[in-house]
Image (cartoon, rainbow, N blue to C red; front, side, top):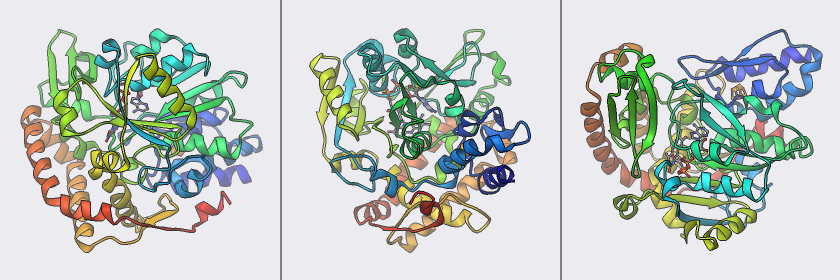
Length: 458
Ligand SMILES: Cc1cc2nc3c(=O)[nH]c(=O)nc-3n(C[C@H](O)[C@H](O)[C@H](O)COP(=O)(O)OP(=O)(O)OC[C@H]3O[C@@H](n4cnc5c(N)ncnc54)[C@H](O)[C@@H]3O)c2cc1C
Ligand code: SF4
């Protein structure tokens, strides 16, 4: 009964202990065996029917590539040809700051509008046949689906970061083997596809390129309803449109109601939603920059650039192909491109890198007391006692804020007020924790971990 054992493994190690990363691979690789279903704790696979022996090959692939079981990043990153090694940003070729020269693209984007600039170029030059991107369903606010398209117009319209846990890989079986595809995804979605490409190169050759996004924190569904409640709006059905990063970079959350009321909150203010709705998946992954992608994009946070507005992205290339495409786009005057060094790239995201590389390690250890956890093949050499205490404080805040009753009470408080208070707390918190966190980052070294997950790949 191998098929039963494989399904049980997914339930026992991933779904039951709450380690699902919501990637959608279970549905995407199986023949109607799993279906992603919505829950308060994000989309989760549900068994649709009894597994049969015919499901075994697909189930084996799912078990191998499921990010909820952990990813041997150090081992897999060596399978990607890059010029430089880093266990903090992932191995890479070059680091850039960049911005689209098209105001039309930039204005609708999260940061520099680079992802869509790149996708449009790849479709136009026939580098790939289709792009696969996460998009909001038409006339269905807060419902997302994977769009597989070669329409420039449609790619142009799929912009901005969706800060809600959403599957992307559930449509894998719809892809045609005689066509080529580029995926845009979060670190765990990209890692899952990379495993398939490395372990089954012929079968997944059609997934030609992987574009990754930096992901610090993501949220469970309910965050927007919580925000609306603080603004006296009880029902999501009253909403016409949600923009996650509207207007001049870094943008704002902008919600338009059906009676044309506009609610807006600056990006750094609506971070107050994070402790209430942060997903477990982003607490238990060490991957911030989509380390197994061909190219990764994030916001180019720096005081000088933020004051300029405009919109800038940081880019990590991990394949020569993308260095070439970027240079070609620069020549065509489609984007601004500036090489930066490793220290500059680290400085832009020092807090979040530390949150992932040290924080995740401590959190996974803590969750491991209660059951299975994802297994990674690196661990930090040393973590100070002060840093461990800081993590206990962070986890306590999240545990209190994510309590249903606490959420209910806070949902009645005005969002601008909460956002303002959160911004002040965040500022002071960063100042207090900076020396400990920075010190940790400067001396950050890792030890290889030889665990059963890594052995599955050897
Ligand atoms: C949940 C989340 C958290 C993030 N956290 C950080 C962070 O901490 N620091 C940082 O520097 N950057 C972060 N980013 C990345 C950043 O917000 C931008 O996505 C990135 O800078 C690219 O901007 P752009 O202007 O080139 O993209 P755009 O041109 O606006 O295109 C956005 C692309 O991202 C895709 N996309 C949006 N949301 C999702 C999603 N949830 N899952 C899969 N694909 C999606 C869209 O389909 C589209 O293709 C985060 C993104 C997300 C989705
Ligand atoms: S992480 Fe992905 S593959 Fe693993 S159980 Fe969740 S949806 Fe399935």
